[in-house]
Every structure is written in structure tokens, then in C-alpha cells.
Length: 213
Image (cartoon, rainbow, N blue to C red; front, side, top):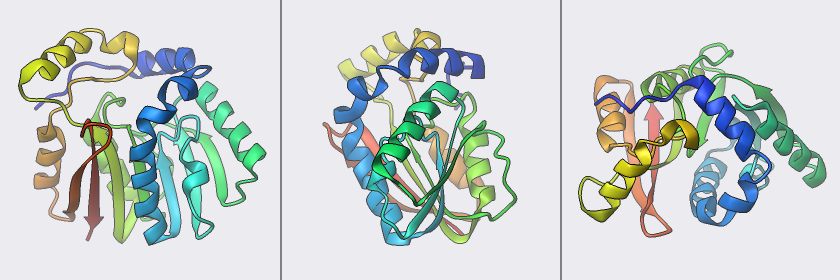
């Protein structure tokens, strides 16, 4: 199923606006998903790419056994993340780079794992982003996702449809059917779905763990 239209320029301009207030607006709502993603990564350890690191809210949640490289399309968001790294003395953060999640500038099999909290609803081409994460993760490594999966029916589906018409201004895609991810997994014999579970608040977000063979 094709995702609603969203462009790199929509995302860049939207997150330049969000950067100064992002932490205030989203910290509490999105914290359970970030904690769950960080816990999954901490169990794995090793060298990790944080795709769509944004303002770096999850960076302090990673243990010292995790060496993190964060990438994001938005330079204003990364400036906030860099300040967080310096203030919290997060010596396990190896770098924060302006980069397109759909075209990662790393060689194949560069990382032990990839983590992408709340990213698939933001990128114009989710499948291309997934392909890139799978490419840079070593065989045996994992891809950890946290994402909103759209409602199929009921009042929430109507609200998402209304918000979907405003995707360009919001900078993310409120309507995101599981089929986008499920169909991608089905096309990839090297990818195994290890875990899928709903998260707080109210099951609005889903943790997905994928293993690359």
C-alpha cells in the first residue's frame, strides 16, 4: 500500500519549526516508546545507528556498552541533540550527522543494530528507509522500530484521515497502515519479524524488532 505524499522539503521545513519546542511537546507522550527501544538496544550492545535521532531524547537512555551514531535530516534538531550530548557528557555518542535516512552514507554491514523511533511516519519513502537500515546492519543484527500504526476503523481512523490531509504542515504521516511494514518484511527473505507489541499510551505506538539474517 502506498503511503500518503510527503517530501524531504516538507520534513525539513516542518522540523525546523518543531526544533525549538519539540522536547516540550513530545517528551512525555513519546517517552514509553523511546524507553522500550533503548532497552532492546541495550540488550544487544555494540555499534548502533540511531536513524532520525532528532533532538536526541533517547541518547541518555543507551548504556555505555552501546556506541551510537545518530543521523537526522534536520540540522536544527541535531543542534539540540549536540547540546544534550555535551551537557550529559554522553561519551558513547560517536557522532551526530546531517543525513538522509533514505540514502545512508555508510558501507554495508557497518552496524550491529539500527534503531528508529518514530521515523517511518516521517520519511517520504518508508520502504527505502527500511532497505537502507537493513543494508547497513550486519547479518545477525537487529532493526528496532517504534512507530504509530494507523487505525483501520472507528473514530481514531477518522481523526487520522483528517490529520492526513495536513501531513505537509505537520511533517509526518498520521495514516500509516501496518501493510507498509508487513509487505516490506514479506518481500525480504533476509528479514525476520521477532517481536511486535503495542506500547503506552493507549497502544497508539508499536515496538517492532526485526532480525537480519
